[in-house]
Amino acid sequence: MKIMIRRITLILLDIFLLTLAFYLAVATKFGVQLPKYYLSEWFMIWSCLVITSLISNALFSLYRSLWQYASIQELFYILSSSGVTGIAFFAVTNLLQIEIAYSVYFLIVVFNTFFLGMSRLGYRILRMISQSFPVHLDIEVKRALIVGAGYTGVMVIRELKRHPEMGLVPVALLDDDKEKYGSKIMGVKVYGGHENIKEIIRKLDIDEVILAIPNAPRKVQSAILNECKQTKCKLKILPPIYKLINEEVSIKHIRDVQIEDLLGRDSVTLDLDNICGYITGQVVLVTGGGGSIGSELCRQIAKFNPKQLLILDIYENGVYELQQELKRHYPQLNQKVLIASVRDAARMDSIFNTYRPAVVFHAAAHKHVPLMEENPQEAIKNNVFGTLNVAECADRYGTKRFVMISTDKAVNPTNIMGASKRIAEMIIQGMNKKSKTEYVAVRFGNVLGSNGSVIPLFKKQIAEGGPVTVTHPEINRFFMTITEAVQLVLEAGSMAKGGEIFVLDMGQPVKIADLARDLIRLSGLEPDVDIEIKYTGLRPGEKLYEEIMMAEEGLTATKHEKIHISKPLDIDIDELKKELETLRFIITGPNEAIMEYVKKLVPTYKNASEIAMTSENK
Image 1: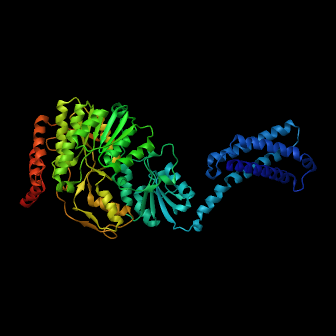
Image 2: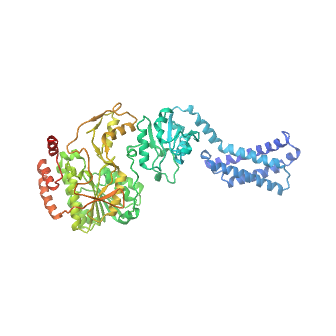
Image 3: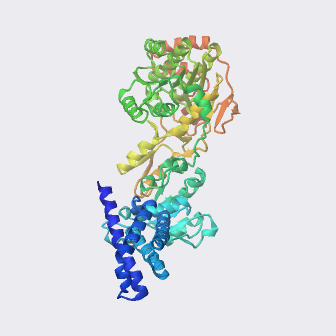
């Protein structure tokens, strides 16, 4: 109804303006007092003009466009409609043998074009004027620097001018294209390249920086952001270009910079055909499906149309939320939530017997290092015997591929969690030698934002006013995003031949103290001024530096630049199982006995007391 009223209003407005255009054209030619001929033929000439104009306007969609979003294309339509109106009007009046001075035809086209433009584009012109003087706003106005003077940067400027309520005024542009230096885009000057960021921020008193180069490599974006974070400006960014395909840049896309953006890790390129080949149309089981890694695995797997997705977890709240999310985004997905513990061998057997999964992603594990140091029995039960239960069921019920999520803490472990994951890797490699199932493990470091990672802890400490606690000034870790880790896990699974431990390229290690400082700055605060960084000392079982492979392992490249394969070790699964039966008995005893026996299974494992003795000898 509103659309119809708007169109009728525009038609009535056009009729009035056409009448005015006709009068002004004749008056310009002959004076204010019109000749008697034009007065006598007025109705006939006016009717021809109105009919031809309304038909032309309709043909060029001048009654269907949303003029608050008018652009060059709409201006072209106005010019075209006005020109066609002039030609049609000339043809019709000559056909009816109505004599009109040629200059009157020309003037009618000029006035009609002007009135059409003002009636359609007037809204935008007034809006642009009002945006140039945002004094009417009751909000604080901040000065914005846009990095990137390409298409995306122009769209950002346009969006900011459309939405003065954001309180962001674009005052400067930076771009590495030297031909743009000194020029203006939508009234905003290009001051130079990104090497001038800090100087321009200081000189122009910039409050916020918006990075508008989503197609640039992540390392380039990260370098620019790392320059900006040394200032006190708030940082915002546009998402990667693949997320903007078929969409105009809008305010909702401009978001605050997150810690992931500062790492500079490029997005993963997947071999979709290979992944589809082993997931599409298959029953896929994800253990630990409600956790941070497991839930992201489920989200990614859902995109590949499995025959059925089995989501197994002991914690019902997390898996319930994932179930509802998948129902919203993948309503056709055949999913089944299984509340169960991988420790329960009988339950695992029942599940495998019922659903016969072709692919298993084993992500269920206890991974919190200090808690597992205090409770080594639970680390062994879950990470070792839970893995053994699931792996044996996979063999028993003909699973084609078994992918276990491992950790860099399994390499030369200094804690029971890492040692338990190393034993789990040994189970996988041993099982692979005697089974038709292809068993592999994927080893990677810390995942940003995952359950138990430092990022959520730091954010909470910052929100509470500090201090932010770091165990040691020099402690560092390898980091990647959850999405990147899971995509590489899926890719590694497609390469599996059996027995491999895939090692993901984690890039360069990051100092935890630097990570804390970055998070404080991204919160708009100053490290050690607004928020204190407090060093608490290494926790039991915690390494200063992590490693990705053992001395006896050598890495082999794969077709994917971010995935490598460590040399398989010769594991006798029957001998290992005998050792595990002894371990099963020992875990009912004291912690010291557990750790001593684990060291026998994993010779590279050093517990806290051994590390302390080594440090004292040094």
